[in-house]
Image (tube, rainbow, N blue to C red; front, side, top):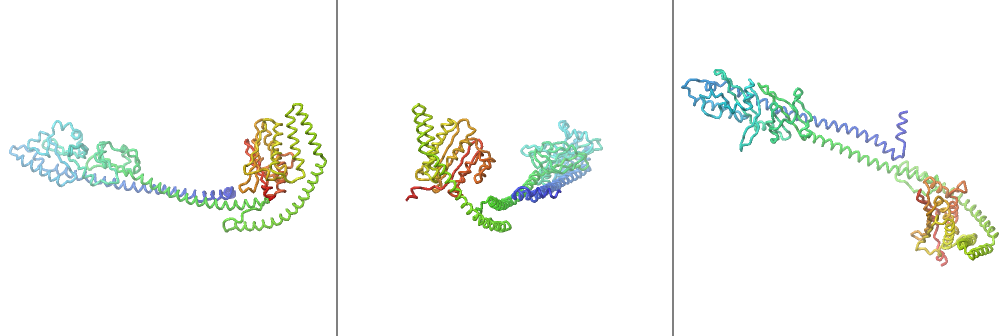
Length: 605
């Protein structure tokens, strides 16, 4: 049952819709689904690649910082164990050579600075009571009252071990910037006190080791401001990423950096022989954008591919559907006895072979119908002759002169009595009857006489209905009505039909327009009879059109008059001429009569 339902679903509607539906379900949806999976997988792999690169860069920075801390700790140990320093600070002998000892210590510090590229400064802060043997120099500095108020010195009093901090340093041109400092306690056991060794790490040195133009790097100590950053303007600001959840560090992923997505790695570095921690954040700000760009390119390629294939499918479906519609239209015409079909259809396949077979069948049907049509013509000629004889008998039963004289007497009596409306009505009626009776035995009259008769008929209707009916007769300037002839009483039934059916629901303002005009090549005469009545819905219009060639079952039904006119035209002029009807509900109806345009003057010549 499910298979039958699916087959039924894909086999409903016209062939074009079936092909498009099949393409959507068989191509577009699978390709779109697979493409989305591949696009997401590619995006994930790209992000993972950038995560790995960020993590590698973070580990490089981490190892650089840790190795720097190890090396500085070795410097601290060499200073702490230097015997000359202890002697300089603790010797009480008055004969002690302070100048020599201070010079030797300064040379020792000079050698350390020269051999340690990472250091920018090295200073030993000593209590003032130990400075009696020390000559003024740039390395050994007494702890003054102002210095005791500095944050790093207060921290040295609170912490017994070594610690790391960042502090402001004034460089060239009096520019302040932050540097990383390693503060170490140098015990002086003989004096039961200690000095503080402060070593500052060169930012340029660190940048040369960790800098990478593809990454943003931020480093701080504990909760202090960032002391080194790839963006120098950011140095001295708070760390850009929340570091409270240190238990889950290191962490590599997508972070929000200054309102933008970035792939980065956040980690902490435990410095050698210290409880302080450095926070390291390495971020690639272009990674997410690049991944999204690749994703967008992938999607655009997919959409372009689907668009091209969908366009090709649509064009082929339209082409195939048009061929089927051509074949279907031809079969529909044949089923309605219309054998004027196209000679062939495009292509060379089963549809073309079927159309060729149908053309052979049409030829055989035409031959059979031609024989039947000839027999019908002969039968119709006999019937027309019988109708003409009946009309002549009826005309002979009426004395036209008696009728005209009687109507004229009545008209004159009404005129004498002052009733001009009645007199005018009788005059129009007499004129109308004279035209009808004088043409009962003829098969042709001039166009001007036919139009005069219609004008008389409309004038009678105007007298009858008053403002309910208005009319207008328009004749193309290219026509001279007296030069052309037409079947008598051909247009009046159409005008009558427009009044009786088209304007029947109007209480006032009805309008009948009769427009007479030729075709461009002056071979056809078109008579447009328009009414502004209620019009017909499409179903009613189709019903009336269908009965133009077959009479309605009820003689009183709307359309019997049009059938008679159409039948007269077909019998007298041929089936290629006749009536066309256009109608729009609540707007009106237009009936067009098309017949050959016969010029009497040209025929006489």
